[in-house]
Image 1 (cartoon, rainbow, N blue to C red):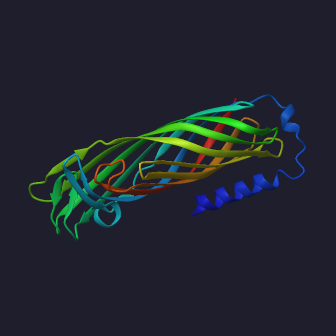
Image 2 (cartoon, helix red, strand yellow; image 1 turned 30 degrees about the vertical axis):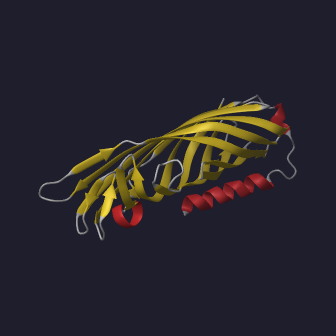
Length: 263
């Protein structure tokens, strides 16, 4: 909650800073590149039911596995913002762990777990993203652009029964998600405050992906500053769409704070 409040404050300050901006930032040295590092607080919930490649799954990450964030998730990015074009590459790593005594029978990728079984689970998620932005509306202190890119997600899943003779199961699914949408950027206080919003949507054969977020930055010096951000995403893949006969859904949210360097 504290990070969300900081994010909203930075975004509001950036918006009000547009009023009466002197435009002096345009005369400052051109700082087109930004490098940033951050820590984040992700949440994840989802579930699957059905069959894929002859293996059945029936599980919910919250009620069955109790997956929760653990550790200190780390991320980094590098971006270039020119007058008409922009590029960005980013990397994030998350870890979720859970331990529950099952209240119902579940299945994980063809393996059955009976009600009353203790299960310890873990999910390590790595996210790599590449994005290109074409700015079709551009001014000195604001722009609106079209985003095109890809997001690659690699997940290592493990499940271990808590018994005298524990059974261990692991899987490493990977997913490539197209990134298509719009983004907008604004700057105030002679370039010391920046904010960016984005919205992306993609659909294929009945499956859909939605992602949106806000990124706010405050520079105490022209080159060094703090960053606060929030983003949320939702994936829905009904049975018969892109995941065979699986009905799959996932919701995630990420808030974070970090440092940025412009050069």
